[in-house]
Length: 265
Ligand code: MLY
Image (tube, rainbow, N blue to C red):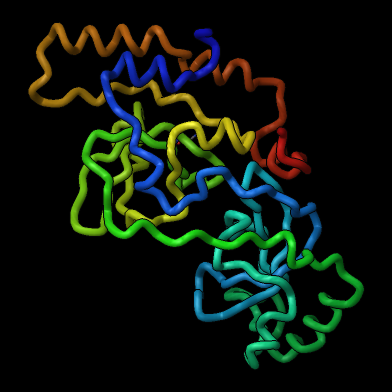
């Protein structure tokens, strides 16, 4: 099966190990995604985390939701797991005695916010309590080790989840490096980040795991023999070119996200 990425083969070929599931703040079994496109909920504004806003589910991918804040533009969509503590049922904010806020970059005049909110909430499809799953506790400490493999969200293209490697560990922080991308997309995050997953996550949620990139970042110490071995491994895997061709004539990923209305089994 050269056509699809396979973790077992890849771990063998790269003689590497997977980060064990207990490293992650993720349920062993991914939570079921019961949301439907168009449902509304309360979400913390990612650009202004102290304010809680109304958001609409505009896409469903695996155990994640693509969200857009009502009154905001379409350039600031964000993705959250169904068990994220950043999202809650409509009414939660009021129950706590707080007020719903306009999103950062509210398209209208601030004075029109109360009326906008009233209209926004009138007769809408509110996501029921059962959709919101409980976020699991974070691991007691950072168990990650350099070299471990995982699946991670590409923060520059947050709809994508890709094969990655722990590049470094410092206290509670881990450096996420994307296999075959020469460092362009790498980032530091906390060990309990909700954007990193144990291998096999995507196949459980029905997300499509991206194949590793094409570029081989050769460590300085790599001998010429090792270098050609690594290149051989690359050739034996699906080449991104082929992948791009396969994607041609198909709808761009953005639309695909919008279309997918339910998580495959
Ligand atoms: N077309 C974009 C997508 C890159 C995605 C990289 N991820 C998977 C690490 C680009 O080439 O910039």
